[in-house]
Length: 212
Image (cartoon, rainbow, N blue to C red; front, top):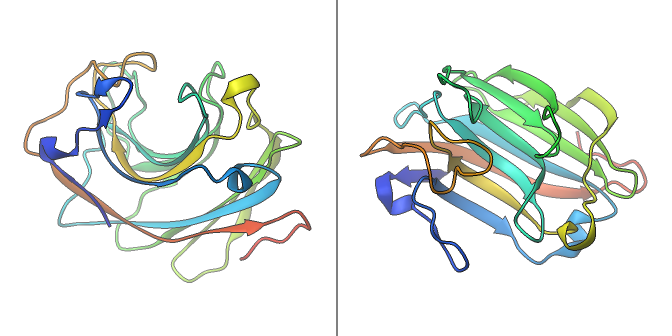
C-alpha cells in the first residue's frame, strides 16, 4: 500500500530542494540498467482503498520510467484528471501514456478505475526498437493484449537513456503544467489518500515470453 499522509509526503530533492507542489510515496528500481534495456515486461496490479479515496480532479502517476537526467518519462500508468486541464475534470479512469514530450502525448489505453477489483497491467517494452505493447485484466483473469506493439520513444538520447522505474502514488497539483508542476499549483491540506499496489515483477521477454 502507498499512502499520502498530508504534507509529510513532500519530497526533498537533493538537486531541486523541496518539491512543494507534489505529494509522493514511491518505490524506485534504482540503478538497475538491465531493467530498462533489452526487451522486458513490467507487471503491476493496483486496487483503490475505499477508506482513503483519491481525488480524481488531480493527476496521479502510479508507475513510470523516468530518464536518467530526470527530464522525461518514457511511459506511465496514470489515474485522474490530466495535468494542465483548465478547469480540471474529475476522471476516475486509468490510462497508459507514452513519451512525456510527444505533442500530443499518446494515450495507448484507458479504462474505468472500478473499485473493489484488482487492475492488472503488463507493460511490454522493446527498448532497441522503441516499441510498447500493453496487457490488461481484472482480478484473477489472465492478461489480454489490449495494445499491440506500437512505436513509442523509450530509448531516449544521450544522457536521457536508462534511468529508473517508479511505482507508487504521485499526486500532481491543480493549476500547473508539465514544466512547473513540482513547485507551482495547489494541493488541498490534510489529505489522507492511498492505493494498493502488488504483483510487481519483470519478465525478460527477449524470446517473446510474457507471464499471463
